[in-house]
Image 1 (cartoon, rainbow, N blue to C red):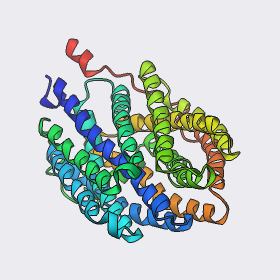
Image 2: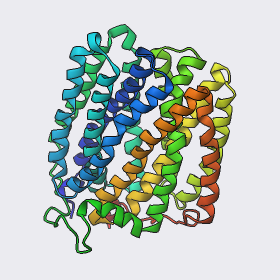
Image 3: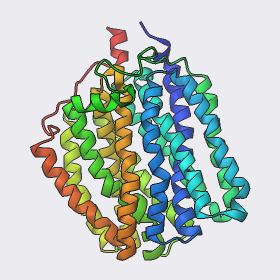
Length: 414
């Protein structure tokens, strides 16, 4: 029997709310980097420390969000968060033109990051409730659509010097708040563990259930572990090194930085469109590992300071690479996570992405301050080679075969 969550409109409204959220968060990523690097002109080690301060508290909030997502109606949680997260954007918009400072940017960024962490586990877990396709295809479709909308958010950021910082921040608030309209049209998303005790039978706090379940599932544990090290110096290099490469190597402005981010995102979108054609993939782990080799070549090209056409082409290729690897990790974890703990296991995956941000910000920020922005790419080359070898020999990903389950549409027809 088809539930309300599996009704055709449920996924459409879910996708709409996620798209407005992604547009605002893409703009957030642009603004946070450019405020520190392009407006306040902070040195790399200061920027790294500021980014670490922004991201660190959200790591704890993420596990709280995972527990809430397994105990609270997902629609209610998302509705409240869409409205709440718009408020700090409005607040900073009122004072940004006159009183912008590093402490103000950090406080604003920290607040947005914590609200994002409180929301993400519920949003990710709800995807399995609203899907009518194989989960690999559903995750990929969502990534394509939200990334396309996210490009619009980055484009808005590129207009900062024309329309002003305050107006851009108010537009961000409007993007966050508008998603609440779509959430209201979604059916109720009841939790799977609303009456579960806060302490499990094993004697550990339920907030740690995601870690326990992740450890008990070797493929999930290894996929998340390898993704952590990949994000540490690869995604970290994109977040920390690229703004300084734009400013100091290519002498670009906010518009140039937005074009770099748009090209990168276009590569990510293109890769997911290509993946969708072949999904469900039988051996996603092998593709994930092979992409580590292509990333070595990409970072090596960027390191030699290529001409602008080659630079943008390589940034596009980097986006393709990151789009493939992040989607494959997410689909693998989403497919293998136990249903009763899915939100909390997904919170561990999100944690693996988020924990790399403060760590890589500190490490790469200091590295760039001591040398130059391009040297921030070198650790990613070494770690990609290590991931490839470890992934083949010990992770189990090389031999993993995805479950080619029937989609909900096929089940309805049978």
